[in-house]
Amino acid sequence: MQTLTNRAKIVERKPMSMGERMYLPAIFKGMWITFKHIFRKKATINYPEQKRPFSPVFRGLHVLNRDAEGRENCTACGLCAVACPAEAITMEAAERKPGEEHLYREEKYAAKYEINMLRCIFCGLCEEACPKDAIYLSETFAPANYQRQGFIYGKDDLLIPNPVTEPEAYQKALGGRVVKEMTH
Ligand code: SF4
Ligand code: SF4
Image (cartoon, rainbow, N blue to C red; front, side):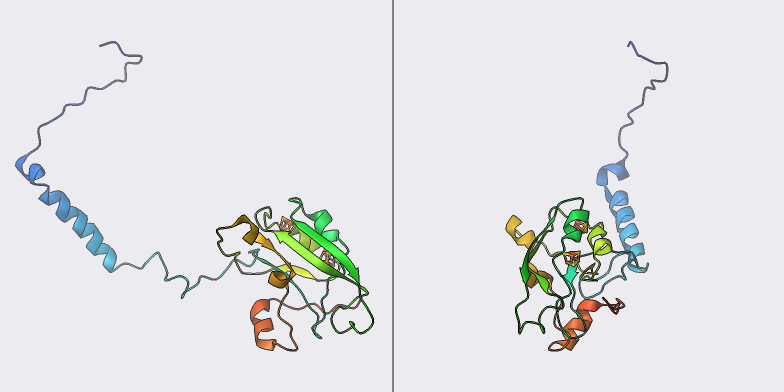
């Protein structure tokens, strides 16, 4: 037989012994390996009942923030959209009308704010670019969906619960995050 190198080795194929032909030793060996793992520490957890702590630098689903009075922080300045390398953010600005001071903190607000989670790479640049502490990446995943349209998150999906009317839901959404006091 012609070979490309001199490292070729002819392997002898021995006929199987009686024990090997019964497969029993191999079955018992496999069962022994399984049995040993019963007493070992499990590598898995019962998700979602149990959850592992996230890394301190974990960046998950976006949250649009409100101030302590429940007003939306976002002024639709567009800096997050400009900073986004994936062009995942779109918004439409609107002017606050008299009587809406309890809804929006500044004279301008985002009437429409959308993030395409299929484009997003969760880099966190939008959070860093925002001068109003209006957006941050939480410790939550974007849930699975069968439709692409389901991954376009609008304001209703992104806005944090109102701390005045829903304090418990607000605290839950906040997680371990420290709220910054805005002075401007
Ligand atoms: S996390 Fe990054 S990719 Fe996602 S919306 Fe923000 S800036 Fe864009
Ligand atoms: S989230 Fe922040 S950066 Fe983006 S439009 Fe609103 S205020 Fe501007």
